[in-house]
Length: 324
Ligand SMILES: C[C@H](CCC(=O)NCCS(=O)(=O)O)[C@H]1CC[C@H]2[C@@H]3CC[C@@H]4C[C@H](O)CC[C@]4(C)[C@H]3C[C@H](O)[C@]12C
Image (cartoon, rainbow, N blue to C red):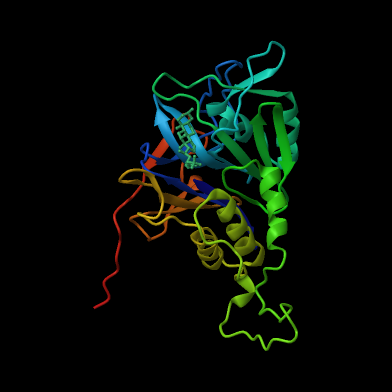
């Protein structure tokens, strides 16, 4: 499972956790403005916005899981197994393969509003990248500093939803996730009062009791409620360090520890990496399961007018600062 979130202080932040039982060989990848995108069903795009994100690079092609472009638009793909159903190629439409969706949007859109316009003409198709890399069942969050949307391509077509919370997990479909927040209306960061029965002398015996009822398990519906609550109440200073730190705490509320989610006998899903991109500055921060020290890759330290990918394999070893 995965969780994506947005966060705003002085700057706009966008990131996600990637939870899985193995890694494809993820690399922080900068695609400069003149890297040629050869879309399967569309003409090639030679010049476009630059972007930075996490990708598996296959034959020099960045298969992005999440990325942010130089205009501050972010996009992340999360598993949507059993619900995602892509369309067939249609003449006269802009046919985009699911693995091209992030480059398609981030190469040409500066805002969510622009993305919405591009989505109207788009047909999201199930063309696989290759035999070895078949279609992934995903849904996506697209966000800028002012708005967030969710894109789901299901049995009855492509849906675009406003996302007033700015978070996304996996199943069930987004409108159901939002509806289920109704179940948690009573949850609050403040201490509760006794509405149970006035005749009974009920009292708080611990801090944090306003949160009782929030789920703590790792199912995607539970993570949605937990991270939505955390994000909606998160408070931090405005500085880069304070904002980035707080962002990792928001996603930390739904991280997966090895051993707690068995996907097949002896195999466990874990939070492989957690990312936080300063979308205004183009800096990709991440931690991994084994490395809690925040690493940063700044796209503006690269030649963004270049035509070749810059790739930074994840640094996975724990970095412990010994103080004596
Ligand atoms: C596994 C991840 C989702 C993690 C997740 O949500 N795990 C919970 C499972 S569950 O929710 O419990 O079911 C997803 C998220 C993004 C994906 C890549 C997108 C680009 C590319 C598309 C190609 O077509 C296939 C290969 C490709 C590299 C994809 C591999 C893999 O699919 C990635 C990493």
